[in-house]
Amino acid sequence: RREIDIKIVEVGPRDGLQNEMCMLPTETKVSLVKKLIEAGCKNIESGSFVSPKRIPAMANSKEVCMILNNWRNEGNTCDDVILSALTPNLRGFEDAKGIVDEVAIFASASELFSQKNIGCSIEESFVRFEEVMTAAKEARIPVRGYVSCILGCPYSKHVPPTSVADVSLRLLEMGCYEISLGDTIGVGTANKTKNLLKVLKEAGVDSSRLAVHFHDTFGQALSNIYVSLEEDIRVIDSSVAGLGGCPYATGASGNVATEDVLFLLHGMGLSTGIDLNKMVDVGHFITDHLGITNKSKCGTALLAK
Ligand code: HMG
Ligand code: MG
Image 1 (cartoon, rainbow, N blue to C red):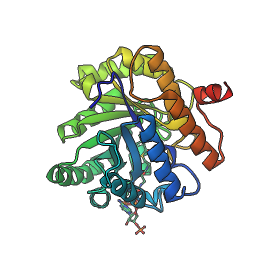
Image 2: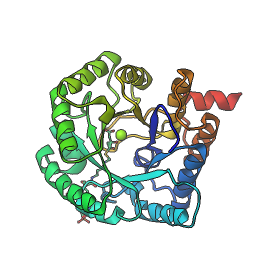
Image 3: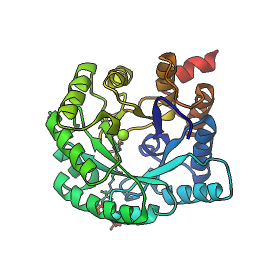
Image 4: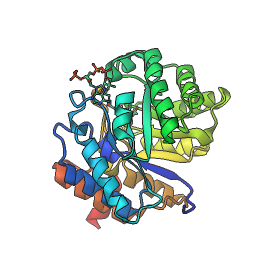
């Protein structure tokens, strides 16, 4: 595996597309992931094994993952590429097993968001996650853990940093190799981010086990990422063209755009292994397909050149 300074987890094909009103055709999703690989992305969240009634845009995830897996098995060169998917329960895991390299479970630091998003309490969600963990260990599939609402919740006013620490520690103890901290509604600011990361460190969560996942609703994602880098975070989730949002977090906009994150990181002399210009092209490919505005500032600026 090539040495890089920062691992980018490209969540566009999952977080980016899950909020779309209609499901993107399977072949377009497959093309998107292939183009991301071609641009140098090594970690790509390609789908979500959830209820199609709840998240219609992800209903073809199994097909997408299966086609990509077959394509790889045909000898196409992407040995060090990790394709992953969300699997909130055993059923989702069983569907994803064998066609993805990694899975992710997603918990919340806010009780109300847990209820709205996955239809159960935080405590109940851990019972489901244990089942996924046990099956994943048996199948030797690495599991990533998300914690949502780390800096605010759409349904409850305040989310204490200690709740984020508790949920993160539980996910690590149960065997997640990495915790992705989700600012689901993008309300975090630099000071709040710094404070949260300090609380997590004091609680015993090592920064080497953390990733950050900022939605950019209030335009704070890049400054929050900068602060996170200062706190030794080395894994960043982002979405090509700034696609995305969570259907259970009304008003939340997309993830921070991968192109903009690359411009920041490469400008700091930090390597990602991803080609910025190729990512800009992927961003326009997908927004043209969706008929939506490209939310990456960098993508817009570089296209105009
Ligand atoms: P449940 O416990 O069965 O209860 O599902 P439910 O009432 O919520 O769902 C019921 C229906 O889903 C039933 O079908 C089940 O069979 C079916 P029906 O009888 O109505 O026809 N079902 C499934 N179908 C396909 N695959 C499955 C599955 N499991 C049950 N695996 C569940 C619990 C979590 C599946 C459900 O509540 C759900 O799908 N919720 C949507 C959650 C979601 O995808 N949210 C968005 C992703 S999270 C996110 O965006 C945040 C993140 O980006 C980080 C951040 O930004 O903070 C990760
Ligand atoms: Mg998200």
